Length: 98
Length: 484
Image 1 (cartoon, chains in turn purple, red):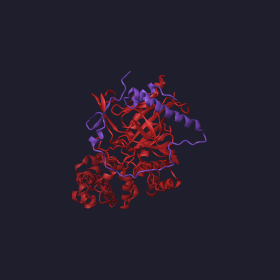
Image 2 (image 1 turned 90 degrees about the vertical axis):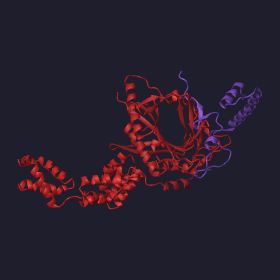
Image 3 (image 1 turned 90 degrees about the horizontal axis):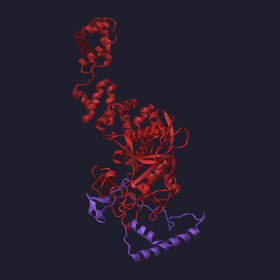
Image 4 (image 1 turned 180 degrees about the horizontal axis):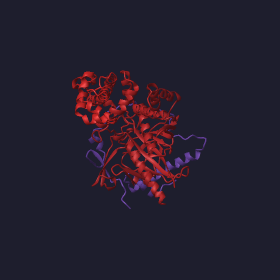
């Protein structure tokens, strides 16, 4: 299943990535290969094959309930494009009235 | 047309674990913004979540207490949405394989019992807190928002009921009972005012037994009282619209505390479906039979059983058992008072009366009461021994509640002991008879109701300390024999 240039640009926009023309073409190819692989797997799946979400036959991996040190505030905010009053600053949440 | 309300509740409960759901950040309330975060709960690339064992077990215990089946196989899913209260753009939640399914919760309103089905109990992570910056502070008028992720990632349990609730009163009772169960389990602080428990309500109207009507969701009800107010308003709003022949919209509404009305809420997140998919960073949970039965046998006494036991052991009425057994702390106080020698019914009366009033006025919980169970038992004993009369005892209680002093000490210091000395009472009665000649005449002329007034005067003369039964006898003797 070949992805269109527009689909790649849409995914890039959701991921907030700016792609060059070369990269668009590269990801078009790479993402298509992944989807092709998924199609092959889907062709094999039938009611006799239980759905799994993991490749490993493992379950019940937990951590004990123990508090550990946190990041200082400035460090926590350091990857944010903008911050204010010790908080992450984000664009307005509600859509504009239509 | 007669419409009935069809209500289902989704209650979110923050668990009281030490650390967050998928990382080691502490869960303590308050604190400077963004000081309880780490790469995992900030969703930094390359970080990996690991579930908190105690949170998983607490969720299973909630399910077991509600009569649910713990699913042998369950899974975490990603719930994707474009709203900045989670830094990852998704919330780790559960979807089609929750930890617990199919339970029940019995609620009783005005003597009528209803069984509310529990659809599921699942585990997810709480979101961050947003501050909306603009002229009004309302999200709809904000220029931008500021987010604090201290709360993001705190384990949050969602308890979903079947649409079996038919009135605002039943909904309130359901939330109160759920809160009481969670308190008994010790898995949450259940402080609604601090947001550790909050509810969403789904409500529609239908003709009794008919098809379901259009469903409206009311978001974020933060107290048992709000649940009642919002549903009462919404039932009326929908009934009026239907009676006027108007169609209802399937929508999400917000309850405004100050005006007591529900209002349409629109936000971007609703425009998207959540595109749930299994969380690839987390492994499935397999609840083995051994694990589940170990949890089941560790369940404490639950509120329904507790109330039944209190009623049976101490001869309490249903109402008294409800009041006394309202919480673990309240039950402990009651049992402490009884252990210190008080009769159960006396203790229940004092707790529902004077103690309840004093706690309400002071705005504190029973665990912070300044009259200890032993002190209350002592006061009850002093009333029984006729050291003080009941009215004085209530004043003594109030003073003890304010000072923390022992009732016996207060009675001695303030000279509040009951006067049962006949000589002293005779003097007081003589004084009252002398200064109320008109009333005495009216009584002797057969006007019985004046007697109560005269008793009151004698009580006043003795500053409320007289033994009322003795005053009654002596006064009647004096009035009927004519002597003074």
